[in-house]
Length: 278
Image (cartoon, rainbow, N blue to C red; front, side, top):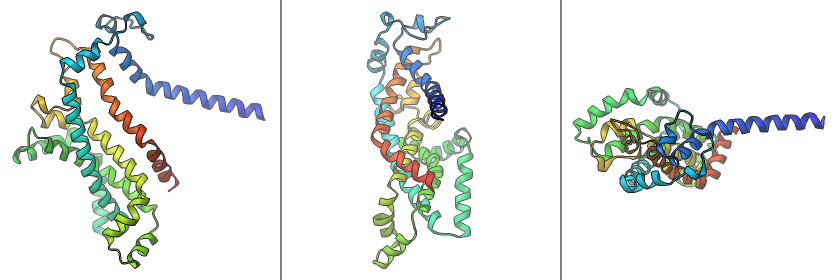
């Protein structure tokens, strides 16, 4: 019996290792490509394990010194943080409203948010471009922040609704007895309990804004306002692609997101567990 259990554990461990290897292989290949010269990267049989004697940091130097990588990084941070904060406020209020109020208007609003999430970014980018053009907001970071907010809010609202549904309404009633208004009860009583949900939604919203390419490419023209995704696209030239430089810049762009995950991972795990229990 013990031997059967041990074999089952080993099979589970092997399956997990295979899944982790498959998930991490693109990142491994990106980092390896960033350290190899172009002649090896473009060879017919690139080595799976790179020769240490051929590895170099020249591509990272080109990405940092010959390209405005830090400007792209600053623009991306500004847009991602602003869009995350704005989206989080809207999604929190909307999720709380959908959770605590039951009416036809609430159900239709929730359904509209759900349907809007099903639309791909490539489908809504043209209407958004027309609205931004008429408002004189083309080539503006504000238009990019609003675009990413419109993409992230629908799903984040349903995330927050799920977390608010798991919080007993008796807490709201107790706060009302103590003299709190609805907003005061939300701020002082409900939100501290829903902190894991806020963290999970914030991470989702940040990643959505960080990885956006469609809106950034459409709404921003000036190179000094480019974000990382549009900056990375500039490594693809008319006559060729600087693969090591592109992979080096891509590797560097992962660092802020990795740091965010490390800092917020405890809250993210507890938030996912809370949603699973519900």
